[in-house]
Image (cartoon, rainbow, N blue to C red; front, side):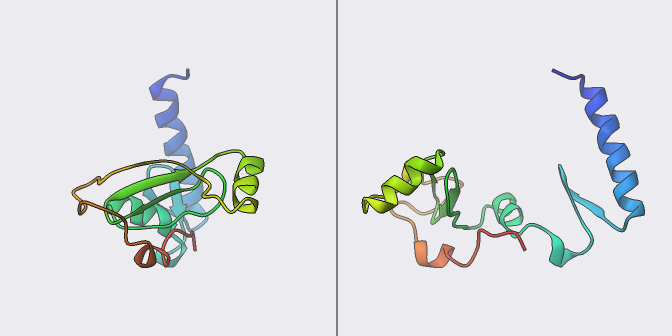
Length: 114
């Protein structure tokens, strides 16, 4: 494991180099050239909003429930081909969300990086 000071120095260097190229630091390990360039999924995550992830290993959150898909692409594809959910687990409600199921339709618009 590298030293915390080494990590801190690397962030400062990255921030300086990326800053000269027009990027600004908006999250622990993310830089963007504008508000529109920020990763919407991450922004939703940090605000505790809803998002829907698709694909192997994707995580989703809606209505206070968080769930995730199987990680292996073959297992994910096999589940879909067999008409089964690729979901591997769920927890919730979380972050003060409502009890009960998730409003998946409301989450469908999120979960992508612009």
